[in-house]
Image (cartoon, rainbow, N blue to C red; front, top):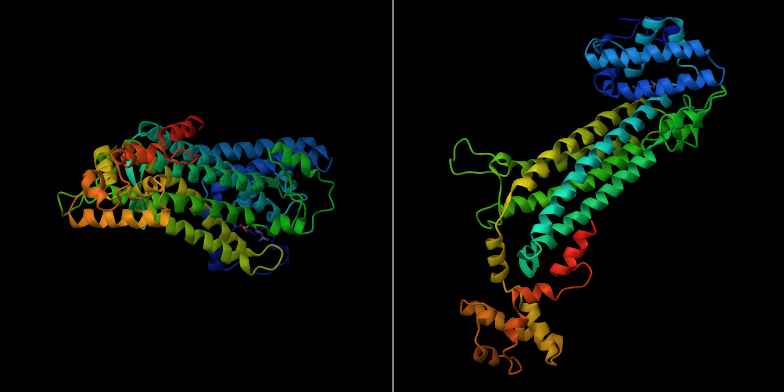
Length: 453
Ligand code: ARG
């Protein structure tokens, strides 16, 4: 086992079990590019400030870039007993360029280094997630544009409530996903500040230029307290919570996909390429993508709870417990990046059964409120019209019919104010088209909304 860089005050080598237990290399190696980017910026600044020579800085930069190239070509692998990615790269650098490599860590601690790496990594990954989310938003916006006048029942308590359109249904998710996008963007922007210069916890006596390093790394600024700079993992928690909310939305939509693709609803027909069969039952076509999305939501919530619990009892500043933050954060990133492409593909390819949606909208007395509103316009107070409409619904159920199929004579048994114009007032089209307020289902209103996306 190579001698540890911090071995000066130790008499014994680390026990093998402790070495393996302690090592984060198996998972933090994924941040190699950010670690190198941070080290290049740090060493260039050290030279600008006259803390190391320009020659050393140039050698460090070249050495680091060659390490990056070798990792990417597969020439350099991570099979090492190094404690973490920071030690791995520094050891490798020193092997390659000698003493200059040992000057890289001047004015820096792994505590501020690892916080920087995670922030840079998160910002990069958040951009990927936003791009994938944009594709989903675009997909369902395009679908909505095709279904401005596709009627369907809106539900409360999963009971048919009032008629809406499929476009209107989809705009609910467009709104949710847009809020998710904002939250992810805000979390990434808050993460995008540099903790370098915090040192181990108390800053450093070297005349570092923190701002120029942050600038060079494309960050928004620097952290304002060295203790917080090394102890803070809010950025991981905020990101995980934004993704948890996104997963909650995807999970609700998944639940509806599962229902709507069932033989009982038949609103959706999933594409063969986005569904699976049963090994035993030949007739089955299962909505696995939606089910897995619903399941993975639990997994992401688990990651968020892990992060919150890891951090809750930690005294300032750095504690090794914080190494555990990384795997939960990475799992959130990997999970959402795995969820979005098949989910978007499933939405894009499924067939919408307009006829069944419309039949369901016609079937559930979803125009009963509009009948009550019709009678209000005839001068009866709403509480009374609600009761009259309710009695008519009861009458229809007993006689196995629907409101719009009743004759005028039948209507008049319940209120003689009902006239021929009732049929127009309670038609599916009227029920939807008259709801023109901002946010409502009327085709013109929804179209205006979609055109503004
Ligand atoms: N691998 C460590 C982590 O992820 C890096 C920081 C180590 N710092 C220390 N003081 N041991 O937390």
